[in-house]
Length: 307
Ligand code: ATP
Figure 1 (spheres, rainbow, N blue to C red):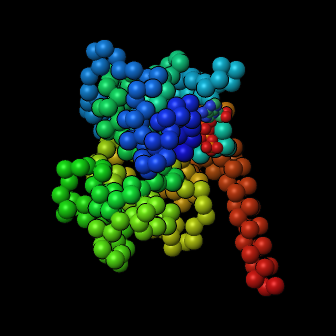
Figure 2: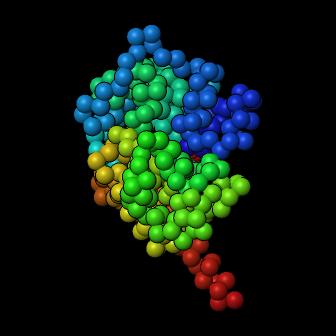
Figure 3: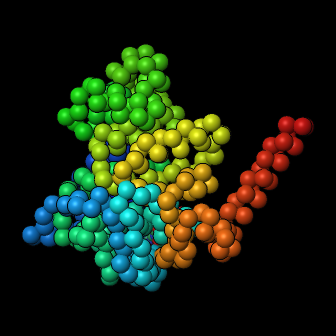
């Protein structure tokens, strides 16, 4: 998902502003609006969440470079309120799905619909107000923890900020900081760990209360306890919302309602973890390879420990 930032390279001025100010994705996209190739249709209205945020990609094709399609005839349906994990090899098209859903780019053929409405027919601001994004690497504003969480909904009360922090399992940690919720964070304040930053992003997204969540799971390895905590957080966040996760961990994938294996710009396998394992196809191969690598790593660590 970080690659969402890449097109900004074309707009040097904006890029510098962004680098200086620790702007997260929604904010960044506001800034980007002026240079944005995607324009609101003249009669664009508000996105109506009528069915709880059902997402349909219908025969979608899109390429950054005409010689190489990034997604090619991509079709899938994500039922409202369900969690779908996108897995697959690097360059397969997972991040492109996020970019198209957030309407960072328009599809070149086919359509993307949310609750039956083509996203090209609604206001971008309205579309984006219904989508919460939790990137792999969260950048915080140089401000207080409270400000960073409240950014999800500027009219939230202090009690609501605390409730969101509790749901994201960061409240107790915040209480240990020198000034609690008034502790300054970011480059010029307290430095938080990657996991803590992601929890702040999750609290922010809980406050924003969108119908759809796009989550780019961090690739870094986690120990079992942290992994369990992360899973609990995701469960809290995804409750009652349509959740699309670029997943790297087996636990996230196993718990997803549905898994799409995205390869060469298309969904090549879809189903639950059990269904896909029984298929003995590409998904099965992916996990066998990953389990093998994990085992190898564990053995290396053990060998090093034994001297
Ligand atoms: P990863 O797991 O490595 O993040 P991914 O599955 O998310 O990969 P995408 O980033 O969606 O894959 O990439 C799909 C295809 O589009 C790849 O061939 C990639 O090289 C290409 N691509 C992605 N971003 C750009 C870009 N900004 N400009 C040109 N080509 C791009």
